[in-house]
Amino acid sequence: MKAYFDHHVVSGVLFGATLVVWMASELRQGRKTRTEAQKTDRQSFAVARICVGAAWLVTALTSSALPATTIHGGGITFGVGLAICWMGIALRWWAFRTLGRFFTFKVMTSADQPVIRTGPYRVLRHPSYTGAEVAFLGMAVMYGNWIGVAALAVLPMVGFANRIRVEEAALNATLGDAYRAFAAGRKRMIPFVW
Image (cartoon, rainbow, N blue to C red; front, side, top):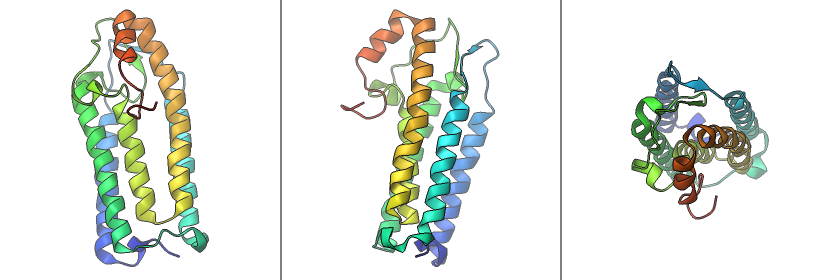
């Protein structure tokens, strides 16, 4: 069964506009760099991109190929997915804004970097990854396929878990006790869980 947005004009426009706005903001943010910072990415960005790309491929291929895994509900399901997606995008944008110049796509640290404890960082260590994951899940619901939901729930988390490991090692090495104290009071991505 085709995705709902494939045969309903308004939902197709909303899906496309959401994707364009989100990707444009990601491209804009991705151009930012910090010349004073040490790059300690260890290819974690590439691994995360591969995991996300694989999840999108599974989602796109299974949305029409496996009708037995369709999420029923039509416009209601699409609307729920759209709302979930925008909540994730909004959280990600909030994280971008809160970190300001310290937010980069490649893991970079510097000794003068403060530990940010405001905005979404009051609750989570990595709210931008949480926002991306929530947005991915919303997109999967808009596609209307349970396999897509599973793929976009699991595969990006593999990339994010690796990236968090690299990022936290770099932050611990550079910021020391200040970062460890910050981390001790917050979960990584999911409040009260992980």
